[in-house]
Length: 155
Image (tube, rainbow, N blue to C red; front, side, top):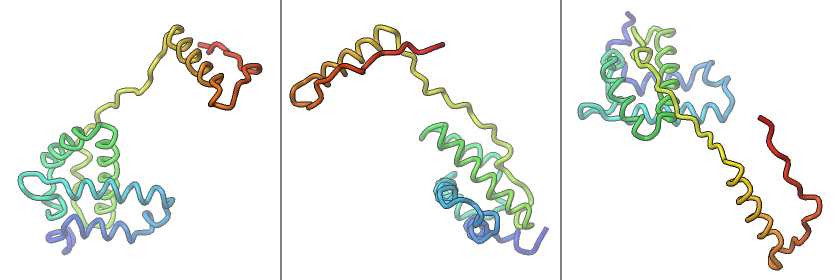
């Protein structure tokens, strides 16, 4: 164990990761997302103390599971992103000998319910009829219906 890992707090680990080659070679949008998700993790309060104020070796699997449950209250998809980003952060800690374990690996992600909505033929027809009526309205400025055709979706 390195000398630093005894007193290293999670915010120090995050700061080191943000300076790393791996982080700085990410696309700008990915960097923003990682920072956002890691920020959520750091701000999470468990047992009266934020993760940001905890030493890396005091972030346990139990604590991470409790945090993950909190994140899932905001939504499973965001919780999974926070978990993934936190895993990457602590893997950096392992690689740089700043952490001994990655407690985020002990948490199993929940599956996200699909957002897929299947419309019946009647619902599609109602939608198209409404849209066509609105297109033909004099205030719309688009009164042409020629060239508009409905093509049934293939299954």
